[in-house]
Image (cartoon, rainbow over all chains, first blue to last red):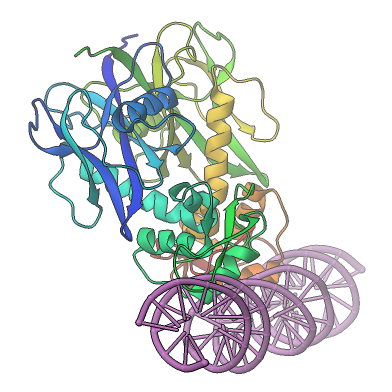
Length: 222
Length: 222
DNA sequence: CTCGTTGTCGTCGAGATGACGATAAGCCCT
DNA sequence: AGGGCTTATCGTCATCTCGACGACAACGAG
């Protein structure tokens, strides 16, 4: 039996919400191929680490975020023979959701790094446009039936801040009153802190932190 | 930059409905490690083929099913460093849904092959119990909001046959009257052929084939 | 103190849901 | 031929959820 060997990499789709729009972390490639083009951050899986570990390490290297602070989830794996012109590469794509972060620093093998709005993207290297589209669709779908939107918020947040996350990710406006009814009605989604804040102006809003429910009943639909 | 190389395999979770229960295709390993243990069918990805191609080829080798006749979809990728005692192996797991098939033949490197009910399984080799559980959960979830259940039926089927698929996959009984209302009400799910059949006894049932809708509105919920 | 802004609660009709009754249309048996 | 069994299909009804939207509450700005 033959054991053909291939290179395995992990690529990251790191999403955040900035200025009311969904943004993705891109790095400018510092080497061939696609020198100077924007790409998703990523790198080779090391012999001694598993796939989630490789994804967490890359995330840490690119953003400085410690593991455990951001949601990290596998999306899909891409392995067309010609997707990397150098050699056969199989890439496992991970989705990361983070609260609004400072502008990222350039990584070790990246010339530059920035947040790009997902509906105004530059040409991406490799097949990264496909990876990104799949990951964004996954994120949009998961907001419906999981409490994942809280991963975009800080530790504590108001219903309106959570609503702006949904509006940014889905790209459509939501009725504040119906949204309030649904998220406060979904058991285990939000846990009241008792505090209020006026940081958004207007009447003080109740402050929540994320609850413990792994899934939303009933789901929020687009 | 180093390019560590790893072996990449594709494993298959082939599901079907037999005798009212969900079954999975298992092969008995004909070589070490785990000689004689049951495992999911699978094999190495060849240098010139992409991942869906490798999955379709393995499926063809194990079941004799031509590509295109069964639903095939990627589930997840597993790459813990010690999941194969021989060497580092990264496995991309695919889910296949097939109508009831004849008892499969043994493959080239499998000593034997059989259908096993998913809630009465033998000990599986490697981490295949995890792969299987993840794939089954994916299948259960997709029945809710896609017309995927028709992949378990033949070309033409009745509402009752489709209901028995749902009951087998979800493992719970469904009200025939409400089920009938929902599936015939979901736009694009079922397309009437005009024919009827009495193969289930009782009053003749209308025969349908699968419609063109890629998603179910409204979804069928468990 | 009034106005603008934002948060929260209520109401209403339309549609979906689950529980279940009623009828239809075959088969098998005598 | 007809009664009884089986399964298919349609209908009813109370309940729930949803989206659209009105009303009011509680802050800051001027």
